[in-house]
Length: 131
Image 1 (cartoon, rainbow, N blue to C red):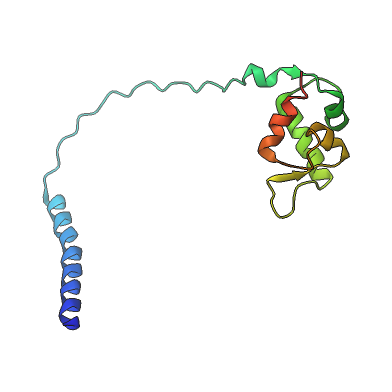
Image 2: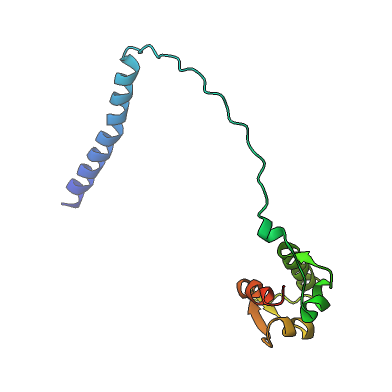
């Protein structure tokens, strides 16, 4: 019984493999159709991507955040870059879970007293310190 089942599956596999070859032979033998050339559409010039004005607006950090990133007004994107530079410099990223940030004394004030904050919550907490 097992040998008969094996032979049946190998015959099916062989039949499946043979079928594409026949189809390919039919396609090759078919006469080629004349293709009409389409008029080439003029290519659109790629416009340079414009930065969002809301992200580029300079915001003044609070006193707690100014201790980390500086007191001068900065765009939100630059604040996040400077925060990450501070985190990497002081080795504050959690070694086991890289998404978590372990706050030191300066960052604890920014994070509302929390000792560990995820990187996704960090931007939400930092936005409270920007005006």
